[in-house]
Structures are given as C-alpha cells and as structure tokens.
Image (cartoon, rainbow, N blue to C red; front, side, top):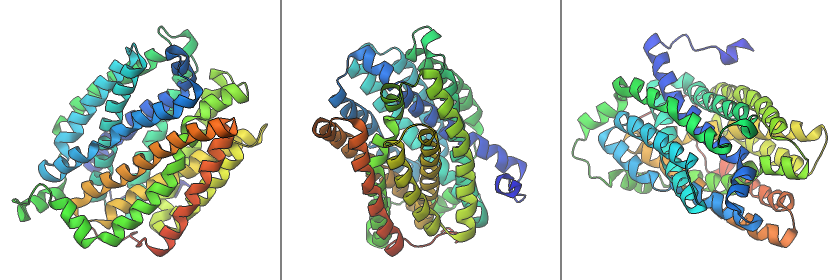
Length: 407
C-alpha cells in the first residue's frame, strides 16, 4: 500500500519542489469552493436567498470559469509561468472581497472572479505536471495535485466547525484563506517555464493567436467530442450534488456545523487516498477503466446519500467524494494527454467550459425540479442519473493515453 503514496524515485528535488508549488493551485481553489459549499446555509440566511433561487446563484458564480478560455489562449501564447502568478494574486483579492460583500449581487460577482482564477490555476497546474513528469508517473502527479486540493477542503471543513465563533462568521473564512495566497505567489516568482512549451515556442514562434482552436477542431475532433460528452454528462449533476451537501445534512438530518465539518474531514481524508490511488491505478491499468469505474461508483454513492439515513449517510458521502476525485483526476490527466503542447491548455480549458456550462444547467434545472418535486434530495437524485450517460463515451470514443509519450 505504501507504494501507492510514495514519491516516484525518478523525481529530483527541483521537480518535487515544483510539484508543491503547483499543488497550491488545487489547495487554495478547493478551500474556496468548499467554503461556499459548507457555508451555503449561512450565506443564504445573510442575504435572504429563496430556496428555488439557490441553484441559480451557485450556477452564476460558477460561470466565472468560462472566461478562463481567454487566459488559456494566453497560456498557449505567452507561457504558463506568468499566469500562474497573476491568477493566484487575483484569487487572493477575490476571496477578500467575498468576505466583505454587502449584497447578494456583490457576493456572486466576487465568487464569479474567484472561479475564473481558480479554474485557470488548476488547468495550468495540471498541464505543467503533465509536461514535466515521465509518462509512467503522470497519473500519480495529477493525483498528487488533487490530493493537495483535498487537504484544502479539509482545512475549510476544520475552520467551518468554528464558524459560529469567528468574528464575521462565514466572512472570516474567506479572509483567512486569502492571506497565505500572497506568500505562495511570492514563492512562485522564480517558477521555471515548462520545457515543452519553450521548445514549442522555438519551433513555432509566429503561430496565430487562434491557432490552438484550429488545431483542436481540425485535427483532434474525436478527442474533443469524447471530452465534451464525458464532461457534460458527468458534471451536469455534480455541481448540485456537491453544493447542497452541507445544507442537506443540516436541514434534513439536523447536523450541526461541527458535525458537518467532522464528516467533511473524514471524507476528505478518504478523498486524498482516492486521488493518489486514482493516479497510480490509472497509470497501471489505464485511464479508461479507472474513469468508467469512478463514474459508476459516484452515481451509486450520491443516490444512496440523498436517499438514506443513519450510518449509511456518512459511508455514502465518503464513497461519493472518493469517486468524484477519481473521475476528476483521470479526466484532467486524460484531457491533457490527448492533445499536443501547442493546444493543451486550450483543450483543457474547453473541457472546463463544457463541465461548467453543464453544471450551471444542472443547478438551474435543480431549482425547477425542487419546485416540482418538493425537496432538494429528490431533485438531485434525478439529476444524478445523467452521469451514467458518460459511460458509452468512455467505452466508444475515448482513446487510452496512459504511458503514452506527449507531443
């Protein structure tokens, strides 16, 4: 079992340090997103948001990931390193501003900006890792980045346990999370540029700004179709399934903030395990079977979570979070591996756009289903079934990329 978690011997000290600096993208991004999930009931009370409007509010905030395509185009044009510093600073400012939001419109606007910067951060971190690591360790590397994200979620859960005692309540959680980001941005000032990107620039310095799009849709149509189908069908339900967890536990099962935090921490520890295992297993047996298994388990676990009680409730949540990170890790790695260096960040951002657009649609539909069915649990249970539609795309369209050389 220790082999699953051990750092590959092929990595030197400089590469390990680089991975840690990249992993902060996932740590701070997942911290910010988890705070929104955990504090949703508190935010709802602060701004008097109606039940049927919650999904639309969350969906609008998540739309911030869509402008990330512009930054991705810049990353394929001016490099990954500069944007990894700029986006981290932007995230810090957005988090502080969220903590001081006075209206629901301000809150949505600041969280919109936070999603823009976290999305770009995570995309570029994954691409950096894929371009740096040997082919036999790429899955492990992406899994390590996601495991650091799980630690960020764990910290958010730990701090949320004391939300009722913090000055400003949920607002303090955003301010606390923003301050260390500035130090990490300073550490990244000497981050080296990706060697594969530098080689690509030397070979194609005068490529048009729109070249990555042309490359994807002219030469990689099957790959982008597979990515689009898998992303839209799975992420159509995952935003609602994840974002309503704290609210569901507190309002339906009378969990206290401390109990919710404890459950999130336990599930987060399992998610760390899931991230590393997903990377290592997908390196060993392939991305496709690992991805298919993760999708099937995730659907089953969320159906059980929103339709059970007692001891099954925490077990289902642990399985749901574990399998979600399995899917996220493998989808991230596969998307990066399917496309060449000259359009890799653009392709990865397109996957995020497919995912976010589907997630927003799912959140919007959740509000309508809530009105018709009378409960969030029933609405989300119905949405969850859409993830099974991703399985045919995995089986029929997706090319295996584990242990292949990147171009």
